[in-house]
Image (tube, rainbow, N blue to C red; front, side):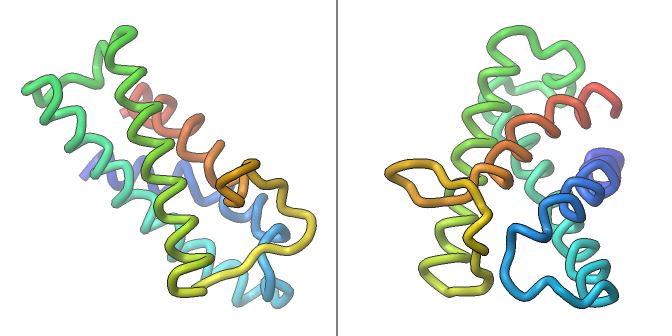
Length: 129
């Protein structure tokens, strides 16, 4: 529960900050609600990342002292999760769309901001938890 809660709370400010890079985020009340729901999804993604580490290291506490291998797992899982979620949501099911201001990864055409989010915040959240 702490990983989920930390993931949701830690990601909410990031979701708010990057929301202008997504189309249709003009209404502030809808924006606050949408970002809250997205941060809950981010909490689940951190649980998924925890599960990946659990499979790799076969230890429940793998993230407490991750070392180089643990951070590599966090970065690899974060990259795969972020690229997969963004590509699926933007192109496969068109659940959301980017504005022209969203910087994108060349070749993958997914937003840099959400990818950076899953690379930067998980190690911080795991450290705090």
